[in-house]
Image 1: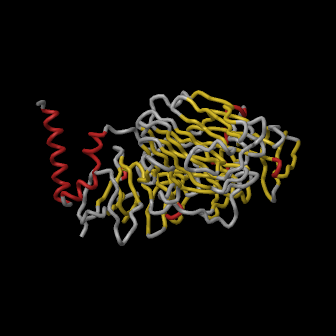
Image 2: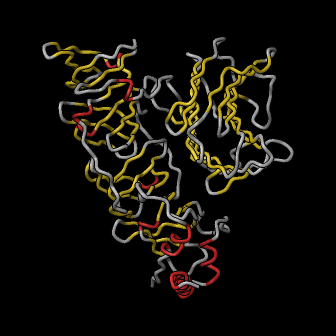
Image 3: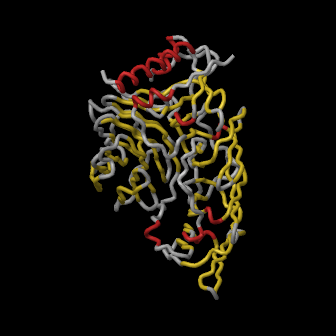
Amino acid sequence: MSVDVANKTLSRILNWQRCLLSVTIASCLSMFAQESIPDNPGEAITEMIELMDGSTLHGFTRGLSGDQGLTWQHPLASNEVTFDLTNLSRLRLNTMGLVRAERQPDCRFEFSNGDLIYGNLLALGEESVELETWFGGQLNTHRSALRRIAFLKTGYKVIYEGPNNLTEWELGAGQNGWSYQDVSLKIKSRGVIGRDFGLKDSVNLSFDLKWEQPYQLSVTLFTDTYNRFDYRQGSYIFFLSPQFVSFQRVQPGTGVLTLGQSRIESLNGRSEARFSIRAHRESSRFVVYINDEPIGNFRDNRGFVAEGSGISFSSQLSSSSFALSNLLVTEWDGSDEEQEEDLVLGERDVLSLVNQDRPKGRVVSIRDQSIEFLLREERAIRLPMERVKQIQFNQTDQTTHQTETHPSRVRAHFAGGGSLSFDLLSLEEDLLNGKSSTFGPLSFRSDSIRQIEFNLNHQSLHKDDAADAIWILEDNP
């Protein structure tokens, strides 16, 4: 045995001894296990952390700060565990949260540092912008932080966010491989699962898909049958695999017709991705996004034929092994996020109007549902906001953000969509406190957050090295 190998082996043995001195053997082994924890009569175990080596751990957050790290209580451990932030990937808090907005968000704000917020625009001037969010109230920032504002003509309505348990879903009859674990719907064989979402005229279905081997997943939209394929009613089916997406229409009396297919190149060598499937009745449009990039754009030239209100998922392979998580179902106004390269940006702002015009100039102000726009240096015009779909702000004005590597920089993902990055200060009772380079000091309730992401620019660690470095166990009196 070489000296390096011997030293590494000794280091691992010492780390295990430290673990055994801090907690019992049973609790230490249970922390490394990635299986469900037995029910605790006092508290429901819904919080979970993911470490940098990919392992997961259930329990309860007892403290969180940028200086002290995360204090974690495992149900089978007699002492609390302290994790340094450098060892954490993400934390899912105790609740999925519910959007409790007094006013439905009608704007999507994108910022130059990658933050995205759904809210309402209060005012915009030459140097400042004021907006209102359901989770943080009124927020103010410099206009140079803004990258884009999209105006959602039908508002932003959240229909569903989960999954939260298996009982809220309808399982297919007979042998069915679907199960619920770690806030995910998982399957290792064939099976159908679905539910009624009350869909009406549009939908934007987003979800994370993680797979261990090749998959064939079918997603049926606007169906009233959730436990099997039903070709006697109208619906639309998307067949997804790592190589392609296929789109079909099911119409009673006509049968099944393939309306389009797109090849996927971006998933080669990957094992997880974020999907977004959108449908709009009025325009008969259907769009598929993967990791925020449009993959397929389809249209039903016969018009929208489906009348159902639910969605079902079906695994087509007996050897499948994949998981669906972070499901978000919202309405969709039929518009798309326009790509920056298509706007030919320079030192001017660009308006995208409902009539497809794209005038370039300078946004002077937005107040009282109208926008003052300097089309040329000598000509200012005023437009009603209902004519504007989107504003892309000129790049020269935008704040430059350097890559942030400090472990206290986190990103909070909010219930209903959207995220903010900031320097973590503390989690005190039900309030999460931080400081944002965009908005300054922040404080919002922890029940508005789905999860917190750590080490935003980390490189994946080798699992053996990560396991040696992660566990920092401290006895607490």
